[in-house]
Length: 89
Image (cartoon, rainbow, N blue to C red; front, side, top):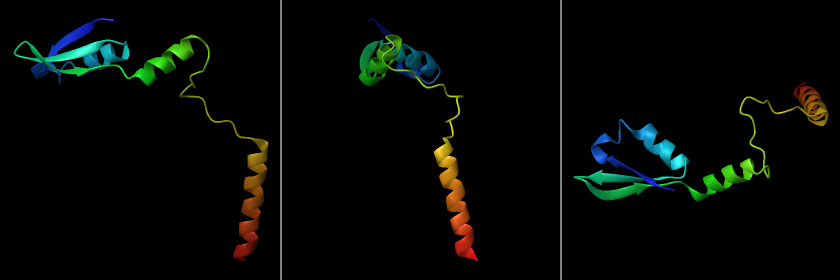
């Protein structure tokens, strides 16, 4: 993978670009006066998770998917509510 150079003075306005490049696996080299002073890069675990998802080893949960309610959990919740109601009397 390559790298992207961004002057530190432009970082605030180009932060989305820098983070996008890092997510894509590129290093972002921050420069001052044309000289490299810092580097932003991808996190190894993030690329591992993305690769495993691409290979079908893991499934990425849908953010809009609701957590299913299990019948046992609903029954336990009802029993607990009933018990608490009787204790409060």
